[in-house]
Image 1 (tube, protein in one colour):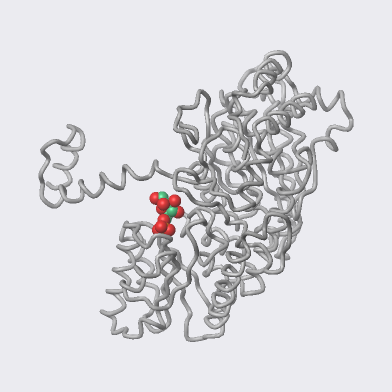
Image 2 (cartoon, rainbow, N blue to C red; image 1 turned 30 degrees about the vertical axis):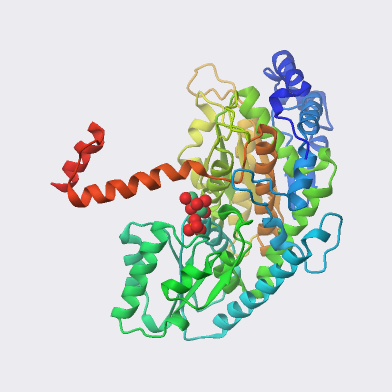
Length: 518
Ligand code: F6P
């Protein structure tokens, strides 16, 4: 693998010059007026998704330099190393192969030969997991599935089960408990009955304190309610089968350390989704993602959607200095999509050192945030249109609806188009208060329908765009050391909350601890 951190390439300096001469002042309205072909040049199809990038603050010269930046940084070599199973997660000495989880059993291509064993294991694990999912779907006595997991062991399956609500089997309810705050588990336990509930304990490591605490409480509740058949009512989704067995769960579905937590919805962690939409639906979800993998792996860089999105992210973060990106899915079933993307992007690229441990002299992950439209319009879109900060917006729209309520879909689509239009066009008004400066960038991702395949492709697209910016920045997008310190301190503070000892604590924590114990 041959990579160079982006700021050490000639293209970086060229982009800085480009930004100073034309980039900073580019006005998309003028760019459209000057080039009737702009929509065609800056839009493209990718598997299951059409993307319009033309409302972004970019022209062909900038795009060409960004593509140079990608080539000079060795993006293709880094991508190929990931798709060859190299250990590109260097701080943990692990391969990064979530893409293998969606690779068909019979797939053949260069670079896959060395991974035949892993691919066979993937399918040997997927088959019983899907059989189990089908078995539970047919089991009318199980009406409630409770997934206990956090982070990647919660956000992916939760987001996907909600998103594919139209495909969910009738007669079964899916609950997701992640927070160590006992209110969450208690609220679910109030709604379910021992004899009709299946608990899925989802944890890659099977050590995460929140998940273990909730799992122990669920097990204690089960026993207290007279439940005895743990084998029927508990299953574990984990790479740490020994710990699950020690906990008392024998029904386990495994995966591997080369699947990062935030990239694990395609593995056994996706079991709630497979139960919800069925084995066939889950296979379509994997197939949609695989289509996007192949696009990312093989499409020329200038027609490669994850590459184009990742390069825009770098352009906005490092040259324009924009600090955040707002995601606006115009489909209410995508309500957990922003939360899912927060972990994906900010846990992957929220790093201040490069892979060699050296502090980087530029900004990395933006803040990613958002809500489904049209709700966001009546909350924070005011700031997007007239605030002092420019926040690029990434819209997601779905062409067809799965309901037949008259008028709603047209109104929804009119709104998403109008918001993107308003951000770009603005509106002159001398009064000030009613003036919209316009020229505010947005990207428009369009799905024909929200289906298992298109959702799979959308999520894989996001995974790969995060890979692209992380790769150029030279950070390790696949570790998450930043979450460790708080975990360690919480153990110490928990003991102090019980004992009241405040020696050696900082003044603020000691003061708060005393009040909490009062
Ligand atoms: O603490 C962060 C994290 O490790 C995430 O990366 C991960 O998705 C989450 O915790 C849950 O971890 P596990 O699946 O091992 O319980």
